[in-house]
Image (cartoon, rainbow, N blue to C red; front, side):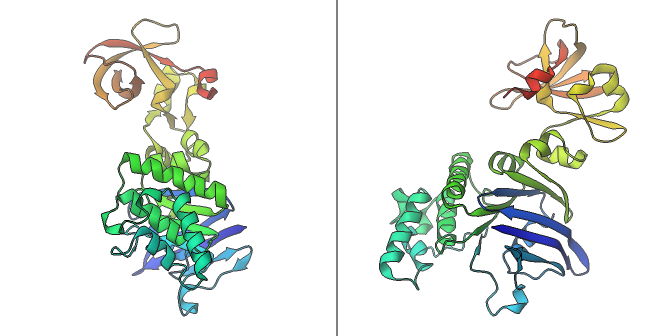
Length: 333
């Protein structure tokens, strides 16, 4: 299976929303599109689902061009299902009834078996006979996914699936999507504004800015070798250093060159020590913030602020030494 977006462009009121987007999706693959609000993510998803016409470009499945939305009496495609942010469930119905309704034109035995299969696959056993209006956001999201997959869709499109979920439900939904893809082979494309969701769940991810697809690659590639400062900042904490400062204080192996003038160093590639090390340089603690599993420390080196992570709280004004991680430490799992 090969799902492809070919040079998709879209304008609204003469304003470009999408600009020549090329993106592919394969069977059993999870692809994330990461971008800020207004970047064109949801518009691209609706075009991919066959619910909205592109001004230029087309969508294909297995090298067959799919009809546009305006060419169909009922927009959409039976092999492509989209789950919207608002879930679009029937709230008075139970989870089981919502899923079963998507199979209403099938023989009852098959409908019941398929519904139960999806309930188990989407981890909804404990709430299967509850009305959806009393469910948590994560349970509603998993119900909507189960209903979308009822007719064994080949492409699953998710619009901001984690947007309204707390941390436990985000993690549970990630596990559900990953297991669905592994067990059914469905291809999944989801859009999000949260880098953590994109990095942790996808096999490949793309960065969308103002309707342009800046970079596509594995999460590791996009995070470690971003194409520009925007991509770097969108995917995580950054130290963006001018070349002269970088070359004065750091070994070339620890940085990623973004341009002739700027170099990126992720905070986790630096360490803090209270004692001097032969590869270290002196810095002063400016701010130390607890972020859960570690402390985020801002240090001043000359007039440059660096962000480094540390395991202990450090007082304001303390002198410390900043070390680079070795190349071996950077690549060791």
